[in-house]
Each structure stands twice: as structure tokens, then as C-alpha cells.
Length: 228
Image 1 (cartoon, rainbow, N blue to C red):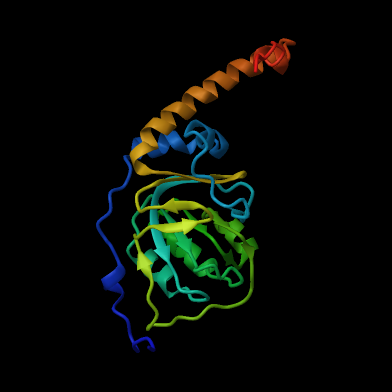
Image 2: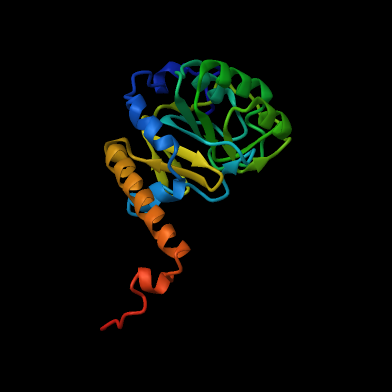
């Protein structure tokens, strides 16, 4: 059955989502993604192909999710239109990576609206300009191939999306840095941030011991016999 000429996008758009407390997001901002992943017992690592377009990009915020039809970015515009300051737009493009779904225009709007960042499981364009604008964009790479705007195609906003093997729900904690992106379920965000802070303190103490001449074998007890 062919799609209707025009689809009512409000049918699959959720506007009321629960966002994380600002102080929790601020605490997460300075924590490395790898530390959060480990502190959460190895959860939430998004595909390693998703990297910052500019190496200095980093962000933390609550997820606003969008599921876009392949090769089409109309739903990204719609998601931007309902976004709020501090949101991280998390986009799944139905596995169609080879399009430039995002560029200078959309980054400018996102920056003006105060969004924290974009995570897209696909490509973007205008790489140099995105770096100059400074709005954090994390993507699989750069691609000049254009997108369409099919008003009859179905998409979703603030419904769960799957990136790699990680399910991201609206309101989850998303953190990105030069190593990649981690997604922490909102229900565990406070616990994982606290554990990550403790882990950072432990690692700082270990670094001091290493600088004093100790070895990792001794610090971690790897030099002690193991009984199988």
C-alpha cells in the first residue's frame, strides 16, 4: 500500500518527556565517556564509528530521539522544532548512512535553541563549517549526498531508537567526547555518574602511585598467584 500524500507527524510525535535535572547533567559533562561506560558496568557504548566532527566537541544532556526514514531529513527538522535547551538530538536514519542529513543551517538553529549536541547514526555535511559554528555534532562521517523531504513518510519523535546494540529512550543521559558517545538510561543516570566520579578519584590516586614508581602489576595485584 502506498503512503498517503501527507502524513500527520503529530501522530508519532511525543512532546511531553522527562528531562534530567540540570545539576546531574553538569556533573556528567566533565566525565569521560569511557569512565561512564565502565562505571555503569560496561553499558551504553554507541557504535565506535560515531565520532565528533571536530575533535574539541563534547556535550552532555537529555536525549530527544528521532527515527527518520532513509535518505530523508524532514523528521530532523521536525525534531528541532520541538526541541528544548539542553537536549541532545539522537537520530536513527533507518540504517541509510550515505547521506548528508545535517549541515550548517541546522547546526545554526540548534545552537540558537541551546541544544547540547547531535548524535546521528549516519553522515552529515559542511564539516569545516560545523567545526567553526561550534555546535557539537557526532556522526559516522561526512557525505555530500543530499536528502529528500517526503511529507508522506512516517517517522517518530521521542520514541526509542536503536544505535548499534544500544536502545536510547527520550530523556536518557547522553555524553560525548573525543572517544565517542555513551548513553545511560535515565533511571540509572544518577547512580552511574556518582560511580564514575568515584572511579575518576580512584584513578587519580593510581596515577600518583605510578608517578612515584610503582607498577601496574603491583597496584592491581597482577603479580599475586591466582588459584584456579
